[in-house]
Image (cartoon, rainbow, N blue to C red; front, side):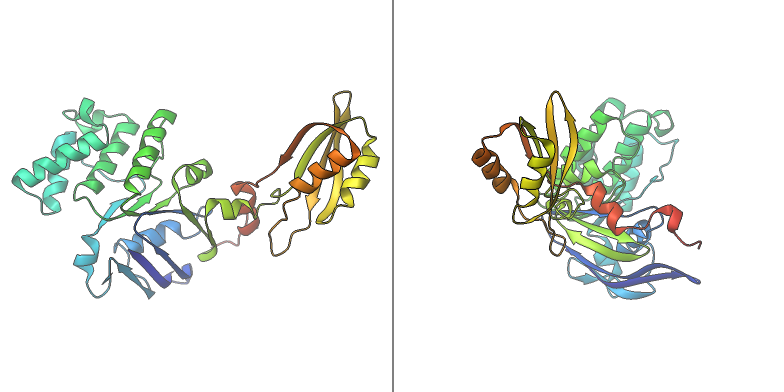
Length: 321
């Protein structure tokens, strides 16, 4: 449904997006991650036709955005960050206006407005003017306008920004439901949101695509992925560490803590091509063979924040401009 091929965007001497390519299929929710200034919003604006690429191509539902822009844009619902609204309009009035801008009139317009009011939980505030709404309801109103024409493609920039935990939960559930039969790309800084709603993730840094995979695949490439934490009673810490260190596939075994509650050791795996072997069964077999009393044995699956930090450049190391 979405195909971006070698997208480049320059603003004068500034190279904001540098050869980014990816696809999004129907039934897929793609999380778009990156540090501030990485080129995420610029890429999303190009996907909607708001900004033309300097070079490269975009196809939406089989329509080239450059060659057949109106047909391509008609398939897209766009929720920009800090989406603009008309504050003096009521929620219903604004949605009717947005529906008419989409070419919906009469009964079709009214049916679309009622549908998105129900979908986005706007019934309690439908008659209020937008300037009297809380930030959460204002954001839901912006989300509702991008759903009016029931688009097969959604492009959403920070869709839960400014929402309280209950509102975030509702919107994430809504995105999951819509993701069953739409192609959705969403930009977010909230890594828990990626786990909650995304089937795949891409990471962009300094305008370049640096990672592409499922959340589980990216977590597995985190620094702690594959580490085995074990709490033992009885054996001397260094004796246990030496035995664990000798396991096939283990790079090291470290004593993390030793007190009256027991000894906590961490077994570090030898990673190949960023992937860690599963040391859990080998550690469990050694514990059983030595007849050590074991209170805990846990294999770390890795964390997205670890992987994100590993593939992106911290702000303190970024070049000016």
